[in-house]
Picture 1: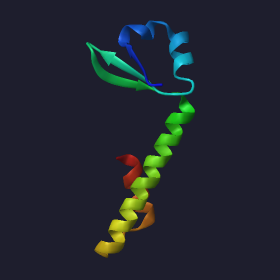
Picture 2 (picture 1 turned 60 degrees about the vertical axis):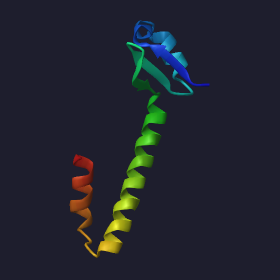
Picture 3 (picture 1 turned 90 degrees about the vertical axis):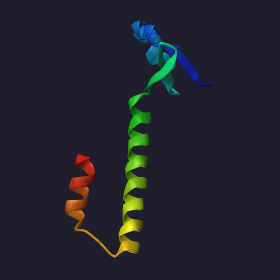
Picture 4 (picture 1 turned 60 degrees about the horizontal axis):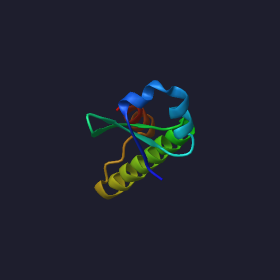
Length: 81
């Protein structure tokens, strides 16, 4: 179940940690979505998935464009963006 809480609930850190253990908690400010609280394992999985998708998209693009670039330069540029 999606959990949406106002920013004032962040004062209760123990509750926030418990709520975000297994699913994201959406934080609102003035009634509008503002942030998402995730546990570190979920965050790292999401970050890795996004990186994998970005790498795959850039690889596919380089194959169709014929403009391949050196892997070291590519990864350096990708990680600095």
